[in-house]
Length: 586
Image (cartoon, rainbow, N blue to C red):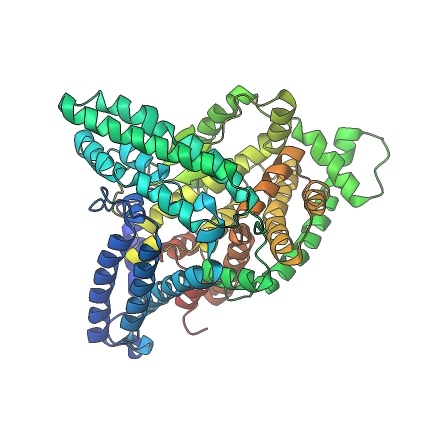
C-alpha cells in the first residue's frame, strides 16, 4: 500500500539532488532525444495501464475509471495478455544504453511488470486456484471512504460499478477450479467481511446526500444485487468439493520465478534462504550473550540454563509479561507516534513532515485475515488523502489468545512495530516515494525495498540510542529481527522444501521465540501467500550492504541523514538499481 506526504523544502532539495544524480542529458552516453521519447512513452503506457486496471488506478488516486469494474472472464485475460505483449514490443524500440539512469530503472520496472503479467497468466495460473483473488469490496470501500471528490460524485461512481458485480462473481465461478482449501477459506472470510460495505455503509452514505429518492432506490437495489452476488459466491465456495484441490505450496520452479518477478533481487531465492540461515545463527549468538548479561538482574543466583535457546527463551518470556491491556492496544500505538517523531528530530536522522498526521484505526473487515498491522496511504495522484495505520482488533478474543498475542507485542516490541510500520518505516518511506519525480517508481514500488527499509530503520533507531541502549530492548529487537529472518526461512521451506506445519511451528516458537498465537497466524499467512515474506530480510540485507559500501566510498564525508534521504529519494525502486545510482560506477 502507498503512503503519505512529505517535506516541501528539505525533501524537495533531496529529491532534486537525487534527480540530478540519476543522470540526464548526454551523461554517460545517454541521448536527450531518446529520454524525451521514453518519457512520452511512459505517459502513454500509464494512461493505457489504467484502462486495463481501474481498481489499481483508483487505489493510487487516479479516478477517471472509478465507475469501471472489469469482469474477470477469459476475454479479459486475453486483453490483458495482448496489452502486455504490445507494451513489451514498444519497449524494444528503446536502446537501454541511451537512457539516463532514472529512465533505465523505469524501463526495467515496466519490463518486469509486463513479463510478470505474462508469467502469472500462462504459468502461475492463480486465477484458477485462488478464490480469494476475487473480491470487489476493497475498491468500493475506498471510493466510499476517501474524500477525494464530493460524496454524491463518489456514490454515483460506486453505483455505476455495482452494475457489474453479479457478472464479476459469475465469471469467478467459471474460472475457479481445484482451488486451494486455505485460500477458499480466506475468500469466504474476506468476502463476508466486505459485504457490509454494500449492505450498510453505502446506504448510510446515501442518507447524507440530496440525491433524488428515486435514484437512491435504484442505487440501493443495485447494492442489494451486489450483496446477493457476494453471498452467492461465498455459498458456492462453501459447497465446492474439488476432486483434486491444489496444494498451497508453489514448488521450487514457480517459487524461484515468482521471487524473481516480485522481489527483483540481485540474488536467487535459494541464495537468500541460505543467507537467512547464516543470519539466524548470528542472531542466536547475540541473543545468548545478552541473555547471559541480563540473567542475574531477573533471576538472581538461580542456575542459568545450559541450553542457549532455553536460556534466551526464559529471558524473553520474563520480559514479555510487560504489555498493555487488550483494550489499550490501539491507544498505546497512538501515544507512541509523537515519541518516535521527537527522537528522529533530536538525532537528525531524517526529515519528517509534520503537516500530514498518521491516522491510527481499527483494521477494516475486508482487510482482515493476513496481517495484524499495516499502513494504507494515498497514491501519487491523491497525496491529500488520509494515511492509515491499520491495527487488528483484539475484540472478542479469548483471554488466553489475547494474552499470547500481547506477550508477542510486549512493551518493547510494540515500539519496534511502530518504528517498522509507521515512523520512520513504511509511513515515512512511502511519503518520500509519493514525492519521487518518477511516477513509475511510485506505482510499481518494489516490495523488498519497502519492507527492507522498514526493517533497516529498526536497527538504525537502536544504533542511534533509541531505547537508551538497554539490553532488554536489544534482546527484543534481535527477537523481532529473527522473525524477519525466519519469515524467509519459513516461506522458502514451506513452499519449496515441503516443511510441515509441526516443523514450522517449532521453528517459530522454539527457534524464533514467538508466541503460539503469532506462530499460528504466521502459518496461516504462509498458507495463503508466497514469496512476500522473503521481502523483509532480502531488502534489509541489501540496504545494509549498500550502506556499508556507501559509507566506505564516502569516507570522512559520510553522513547518515544524507544516506537515508538520498536512498529514499529514488522512490520505491529495487535496491539493486538504487545501489547502481548511489555508488556510480563502483
